[in-house]
Image (cartoon, rainbow, N blue to C red):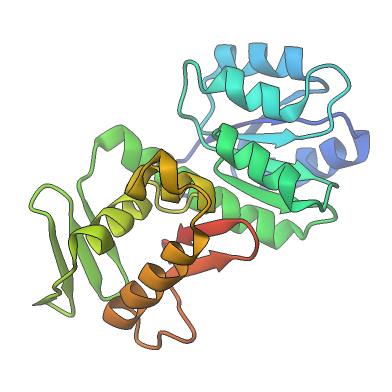
Length: 230
């Protein structure tokens, strides 16, 4: 972790998960604060001003999606969803409400730590207002609207650029099909998922070493896409 004392607020009603993360996260140099329901969690986030929030969807008082909505009224802190629900509609609802990422229970500790590192880098980049992002051999300068791969300029169509810029601005965050379609093509196209498949394929051909096995423009099956930071 780049921050010597990153702060995480865990909003989770399952004692065994709280015990697990109470052991794992401090060992990684992370300061952990816990809440067993949504109401207390909102207070903890407001008080602690964490770098990342880890949030269970199935809370005993306020639903996790509602917690995300309330957080997004005043903060852009990265939110990682933990959920035993495997239905993609639950994941999509949380992501559309403003969550950044999700893990399905049971989850591996290594994977959670990796997701936390990505979320913290995204949080730091948002705070410093960085407008130039480098992902592998690709550099995207949002101010200059310039994209380079291995130092050579890459020509993108206006729609390709808008799609890439949106992913860059939210790098590391899972963006749903609906969100991408609304932001890039407009509200009348939120059901036109084939647009995304076509343009993501074009971006991968231009930016990935192997478009059939992308390392950076990642598909989240049934949910959306993310720009990987590593």
